[in-house]
Image (cartoon, rainbow, N blue to C red; front, side):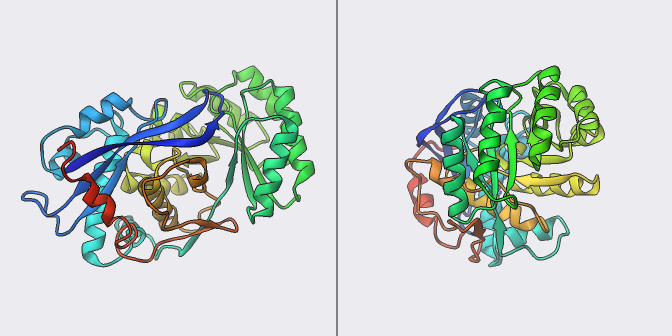
Length: 359
């Protein structure tokens, strides 16, 4: 196993209630035929930590610098402690395995979870950051004009009154059939959340994501019981785990980030458990580079009848690691049909990892 560090700057800061995201720093993870791994061909993975959702960059780097074969590294990684590191290693091994089998990663993941044949394309939402009502409505209109039928707006950085004005401006600007979601990133306390949801109920939102801080699972469950607006959780999954969130009946929707859950395999498994509990899964990235983003597309495709997912994030990056094998077109993303992640599309990245930080 070998790794290489990378930095992917955003084209402009993504403003969230947790503060702006300006760049993504991570590691490419490459595996190949190696004694003890049982790997027959090359595979590529990505470990791109994001503090607040995953381990710190330092912890991720330390977890990958083990000097052991990939499978031994994977066996030693705790997905709750170092999910981004585990994501990188597990993805590289899954890419290699599905390439050796001659089938797309989505089929490999679906088969491993006992699911039906994966979808060939997945609907996506457009993510719209913080801004004035005019700026927010203009961004929403541009996304809808491009074919998107689902929007996710960042809220919580401003007052409830200001966010209500922003969402009302969006509702006035786009057709009623366009699905609108709001993501507070844990910015509200319980009283503020109740007030916000009461104000937002007439706007027919699909759901409000992470209205309360991730630590407040009991209060989130109370809010889900008492509010007419559906509640989704994101950061709460990293804080408490999927099983605890489902047991608490704290959400109508779970927002599954493969990077934060420890890998594609764990994410598909979490989606199955959520569906069994009557909770809908949605797959999103953590504003990842192209390798992890492509993996998230395969994860979403493996989940039957998945609703619009947060996979249209390539445009947020000023620079990427390679050409995108699954660009978004008219609100949908096609799943690469080559073996593994995308056939030989990432072979150049595998070659680029050689000679760097050996892990």
